[in-house]
Length: 247
Ligand SMILES: *Cc1c(COP(=O)(O)O)cnc(C)c1O
Image (cartoon, rainbow, N blue to C red):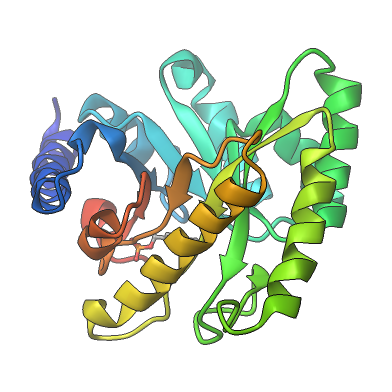
């Protein structure tokens, strides 16, 4: 391993140890939590070093940027998976279907319908795995289905469930769970209610739509991933703790 891979391997080992401890604190199996290395803004060489260091799943937030990097890393394709974690514009949906293994950021029924249509044309025998992005806090971002206060607002939950029903009827996509982004802040504990509410929402959906898979909860980043794991995260999206600060 060269220097950069050695540094990345040390950081990954450290994060993994924290991940294991967080899972064990709440009696969870650490193997049920997958680490997604968020490689946005970092060049292909850095991603290659991260693969040497043991990372096998990468998150990108822009289709065009990811497209160029994946082309440079095509030889690694069989051993790694690519995750789209940023907002997806509908005019990029076709390309996204060709590139990504899991799309975390589906935030409208129309986008899901577009993805379904592109899958039908491009890979008719497969289903695209996707997560539904939700916003339960109001502060974090304007992205995701608006579920602020959903536990007190049945109309909001019902409107969301109508969209979910529409998604579950699409034959070329597979809804696998939920994704959320907690508010930015200095106190990671402040994210706990957001993660807990997202998990409760997932449990509610699993009751209403038991025929669908609701196993994935994509939540937690560099500053709050341990709390997300304590609250049930199965996918944590970590950038800075692995790659250092972004420009
Ligand atoms: C950038 C980003 C991350 C990673 O954030 P870090 O703070 O660098 O760990 C995770 N999720 C999403 C949606 C992001 O845009």
